Structures are given as structure tokens and as C-alpha cells.
Amino acid sequence: MPIKSKVLAPALMIVCVFSGPSALAQRAARSDRQIALDIEAYMKSAVEVERFMGAILVARDGKPIISRGYGLANIELDVPNTPKTVFRIASLTKQFTAASIMMLQERGRLNVSDPFCQYLPDCPAAWQPVTISQLLSMSSGIPGATASDLGAVRGLPVPWDQWLEATRKKPLEFAPGTEFRYANSGYTLLGFIIERLSGKSYGDFLQENIFNPLGMTQTGYENPLRIIKHRATGYRQLPGAPITNVPYAELVGLYAAGGIYSTTEDLLRWDQALYGEKLLSRKSIEEMIAPRTAMRPGKSYAYGFWTATKHRRQEVAHGGNLAGFITYIARYPADHVTVIVLSNNGRGSSGKISGVLSSIIFGTPYEVPRERQAISLDSSVLSRYTGEYRYPHPQGTFFITLENGKLFSRRNNEAKTEMFPESETKFFLKSEDIQFTFLRDANAVTTGVTVDQGDGTVFEVLDGQKVN
Image 1 (cartoon, rainbow, N blue to C red):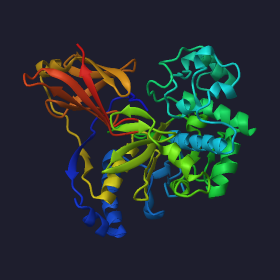
Image 2: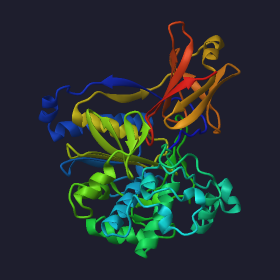
Image 3: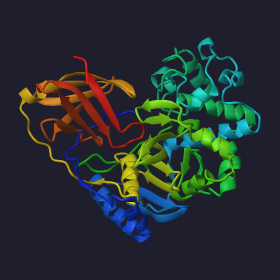
Image 4: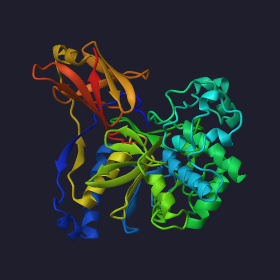
């Protein structure tokens, strides 16, 4: 998801680097108990400093090394999070949509190289060249309908024909197949295709073809009227502020892009199915997780997953962010290692936590949260960093301004957010786990900025070049 600006509040965190065992032999010699103890020590800091609430599961060869909950699923009722707590998994939904498309391909109902308009009547002319594969890999160029496009119904459940009509009117953002742009629109359209070709609703298709066969009894397509046992409530806690409820969201484009709920235990069942052929052939699974579209150097989008090299091995992963829920699943196929982090505190950084838990398993350096401390800098120093910074992955612009002796950042058309210095070149936000490092040349002239978003749902590091 893109970086979002939120209300300001005091104190974030600073990190200290710890090194795990450096040699693979050392890593292999560590027992599951030792790994679990290191994870518990890290999670204690994540709970205390970052206010993590949720559930984690770390498994090797399909067997949990650690599986437990932290904090409360419902604060008002004092109900704890456990491995059986149900979370909205947000964009983790996309991998199930992709798997459904691969099933339909195996059954001869479609081919991912087909133009998707072949399965959706009344497509606008601009959509005709777009293939199903490009929808899956987020390279179609089709924008989604925003709340403002939908007028008076925004914030309510939106009829899909109305969403489709609003989307049809918008021009492509780029020529199909030429760029990557993270958006829900392609997966919404894939949901239409699944329903049209199967003759079933999206939720029923997944229930009959994925969830029931795998015994995922606590997973389903969300219906706001349905009573779901053990369902967590979504919260939000800014640093130094009290925790608050997050209003329930019927978000435009949820559907096949983000409408599923699940548990850590059920997601491990899903992960294990991707090693066998119970749901899909090995050929289809390999096609599904193969890198397709470059998101940024070293990271590519596949079908419902992204893939990159992490800890010197391939990571196949995805994150999600929705209405108080932050989620992440990371798979390391060569090692049969799985890391699942589901949080019901929207401040959290499930992607970063997943990366640390993986580091603990593989014996690579990791960081433990500590409180960040803001320092004072003279306006003459802050003024060096004002300007416009553009970055390619994902495309966008940061505008850095100096106002009344304070530095502010604004990404694209979002609200501006105050930046707090922790050194002469490093700044952080108090509304999100986001840090800025300004780059300077030999003459101390600012040339760019690196933006690190610990959430990790779409990107970890952005390198923006100063253009004025």
C-alpha cells in the first residue's frame, strides 16, 4: 500500500542491530527451542515499543516453531489474541484470487494469455489489449474507481456494476504490459471473471475449491452481516496516544482484492498446499510465483505474490493493510520456512516483523525496537532538504517543505506530515514506521532521499532523486 499520512503524536523508536549466527552451519545447528526463545525476546520489544497486537506463526517443514497471540482481539471485552483469532487479511486475498484463476486455466476455461475482455462484455476500446496475465501481475494500466468517482455511495457497499461503470470512464495509466502499478482494480476484474466462468459467487468458489478441501474452517469471504467466531476488532494507536477503534470499512475494491478473513493456522494449511498438488499442479504453482513485473530493483510482482531475494534466498510474500489490520505472509520455498504475521493494530509493521522473524531463523542480522529520540536542528540545516524528490518504484513525488522551523513531507496529493530529526541527515515520522535519510554529495549538497517504510506491504526502500 502507499505511504499514508496520519495524525501526529509523540515518540517512535530507534533500533539497535543484533547479529544472529553468520554461518549456515551455525544456523542449522540451532534448535527450534532456541529460535523460539529469540523470537519471544524480539516480540517482547515489538509489543512494548511498537504496541504490536495480533498473532504470529513461524513454521519449518509445515511444523510450527512458534505460534501464539499477543495483546487483545477485542479490548472492550478483554478477549486475547490467539492462533485461532480471525483477522481481515486484506491484500493477502490476492493470492487466493490468483490461485482461482490458475484453477480455471487448468480446467480449460481460460488461458492467462487471453485478452480479459473476452470474458467481460462491453469492455472499452482501451482495455481490449489487456491480458489476464497483466491483471494478475498488476501491469494492465487500468486504474480503479476512487471514492470521489462514486459520488454519494462512497463509504457504503458499492454495486459492482456501478464500480465497473466508473472505472470504464477512466483512461489507462500506461500502455498494458509496460509498467507496474500496485492497485486493486485488476484483482477486482479477476473476481468478475471467476464468477462469470464458474457460475458461482467469488466467495462460494473459494469456499468449495480452496477452503473446504484444505480444512481452512476459519477462513472465508467476508460478509459484514455474518457472525464470525473469534473475529478480531481493528484498532489504531499512534505513538504516545491512546488506542482507538477504527471505523468498520466497506472499502471500494475489497472483493477479490482484499475481502477474505483467516487465521495464522489456516494460512499455514494454505502455505503447505503450495508444496503439493492437492489444489494445483506443480506447473501452475511455479507459473503463479514466477517473477513477472519489476516493482523496484530486486523485487518483482508475480501472480498474487511478490518475490525478491532476502536472507540470501528467494522470498515469496505479500502484505496487506486495511482498516486497523496489517498482515504479511512470507514463504521461503527452498527451506520450507513460513512466517505469518497478522496484526489488528493499524500502526504496526507486519512486513518488518516478518523480516526479523526470518532473520532469526536464517541467522542474519536483525533490529530490535527502541524508542526514537528527536533532536533539534537549526532552520539553516533543515532548509538544505526542502524541494521535490521523485522516485521510480513505485512512481511518485515527495515534496519537502520548511514551515515555522519545522520540516514537513507530502507524498503526491496526500496530507503533509511533520518530520522529526534524529541526526543531521536522518528523520522519522511519528504517525507511521517511516524514516528518511537525505543523501548529500562531497560538497554537502542534497542530491536525494531514501525512504524506508517498515510496513513493507509494497516497498521497503525508495530512493528519490532531488529535482529542484
